[in-house]
Length: 193
Length: 148
Image (tube, rainbow over all chains, first blue to last red; front, side):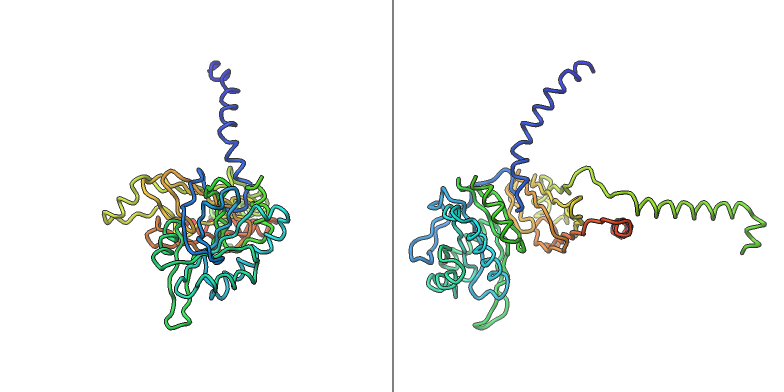
């Protein structure tokens, strides 16, 4: 018993050293993965006409959203919030890249994505490709998308969260729908610094 | 009724005891602050879950509804101890990975979930009970959910 008591400070130090990284990520407003895994790589058609390759953005914090330009409610809100957060980040905004991957490649061409995203923030980049390509990207990120309705005006029910990827390309956090711009600013600032 | 109680005083004593106990419970429930040892509500997807499900077994690990309370117990902590990736709610979790999701706003959140046989999970986040009446309602609701 006395031996155990003597070892207590050592146990306390060990415990503290083990919990320190966890405490660091617990302050994020978003949901946090532990350990963070490598963000799945993708290479699709960018809305700027160039190939959109995730690893090209190493060194920046990537904010990765999934949606489609005909989305009536979730996507406009998400993109407006992200645009607001980007503005609020000021100079730090240049170290952040918002990537918007379409879940509706049938209708969302690169040009349509470019026009749509420009209405929110001209620095946002969209990604599209073949149905198979986009399905693979969704699968690797655990994103769901399901066509609802028929005809030209169909909708797509899709995951509404946003991923936060570190400068090192780690999938660190996930922000559920409904968070405000200040929450993004808070988390992105932590990831940048 | 009163006559019966006079003839059988033990019934009167029992009735008073029950009334005092009930009143005491209500007073305790209203005035004792709501606390938890941890703000995290933890769920683990055990090893072999996917295999058991693939073998045709009905495996329920996560409840169809999880109840949290802002400011007291408002963090959902999920751990995937299985050998395969699992989609919980909004996210794909790798084997051995955990996901810690804090909530700041009282609301009801719907998540898809492959770890759940129904494929759906709801996280209900209640507001923090700040006054005696709210604490009473919070505890009554919690007791009701526990037996429902």
